[in-house]
Image (cartoon, rainbow over the protein chains, first blue to last red):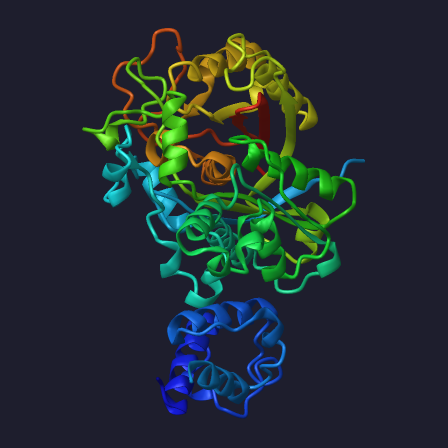
Length: 81
Length: 411
């Protein structure tokens, strides 16, 4: 079980690996598309890498609801519970 | 009046140099880019061939990690060469609707395709990367170059095996002559040093098995040649309508005077032993460029170092150039860098342009006992080419019976 801080840090590493964005730029209130300029293909790669890292399943139909980094952190946290 | 087309930019990343100046210096010196492969898959799959000619500068040393992640290795090489050629052309402003791309590959994204297949089998469909399709498609390299430069007059990918790179120049010339573009970034890229293509080329007996001496393995025209050496990399050339180049005061390397493409319709892989298709291609390129046999001073030959391939090219050159052939300096640069498959024609075109511009013919290495049935004047140490109006030819032939020739004239 990871804390929300640990999930955020892990997610930031995944986003950095995929897009080159600095990990500090990945904050809870940031929108993946509007603020971080992440396209749908990168988003799917991030989702799959997050699934592996956190041992959760993020269904395809759920991905569109993950608008902000905080949404993703919450989803992963709940899925781990 | 046919539009005249000139060459204003050159780029390359090859086994004997990661950029054009390094490649050219080595091509005149005569070095081998072939090395024993250190990869564990050579032993794992018990490959009969243990060596290849890798690009001397890894693509990941040049490209940013994030942009490289979205490209197959072949596309990475193509983008590196295209950027060098574009920078070399000095073009700062261009009508992007009149800028086209003709960038070839022989095989395309073979690493991406086979990695994705491994991932599917080992980890399941969820782990197959969403970028897999755009990375494996053969037009991926042309698309990436188009995206990189903002080329909107079409992004084309001629695919004709080992003739592909030369066919890209043929297409580029046609695009400018027909008025569809003013500037075309042409080239070819390949990255197929992967166990599957090595196994496949081996099983058709096309690769040299001189495992004990990789640097001596590619030996075009030598009596003891036993196959080609797999290479990788890319070459790129900026073609420009002459009036467009003159208007911006560009440095012009040479004129792309004529090109041609023919097909053997003889056998799917074996060359026509009489070289009839190659002869027609040579004659057609010369006709297209208004080239007389006496104008030709240099040929960058296809010459892969296979037992069956090198001789029909000689037969074709003899038929096209007649007795003048004895005055022509022939270079077989695959002796140095191996066979870059779909990129070979583009890289050899860069060398041919430099030969005309610098008036020097690059070196053929490993020619110890010249095949008596191929009495060409082979350049074995860098040689000056004559002053005045000169023409050089570059040939490429591909599985499928594809023949492509370009004629490059001094300006």
